[in-house]
Length: 259
Image (cartoon, rainbow, N blue to C red; front, side):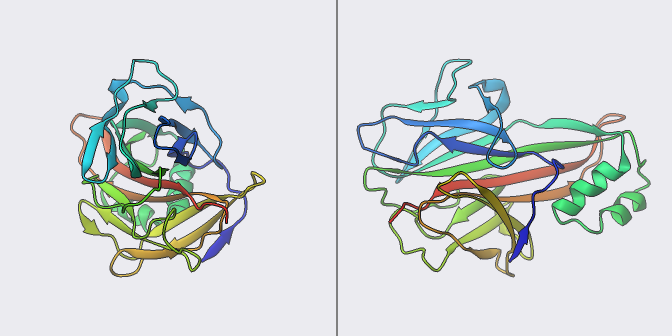
């Protein structure tokens, strides 16, 4: 584990931010979609053009998260079951253009792609004016009623799966997670853990998955967490000037209840 100091805004995280991580069975499930850093950033409205998937899974039931255009919080679900609710959201693709080579290198270093310069230049790509596309593949765990249940694979392109339930299981020794990419375990990959304590202070630590794509993340009661991992893959541009890299961002938010 590596404890990082405050980081410059090299990349913006995307996460699901429930209004409450634990709700009674008769209360609505509500959550905002946020983009930013250090658990701070604007919330995004419910816009169908922005996502390819927006679901809530409880037990064996998966229900589309429906809403009115412009709704904020983006998720408001009044009718639901009880147990562990897994909110699932995948974005449409977005693009950005790098006009500064160092900016791309800093992003790649931050997200643990140390060989990116050699790979980029080996493809004969320019050092400025090139494009990256990206997509977000995010989940959140919310306890509804007793919060009983388990997270599982839901078929996201990249996905973090909690192998223990932070609301019902003993996670005093840490919470185990598995990282997948296209359904396969992603070994030796960086996982960032964002930690917000009860006073609102935020810290981040760096961890690595093992050969099976699994990692044990340290957690404490009363804290809110976001686990985050990024995959960066080469792509061939469909049109002239199109993206030459695509980054896939996985995140998973949850809370460890206070004792």
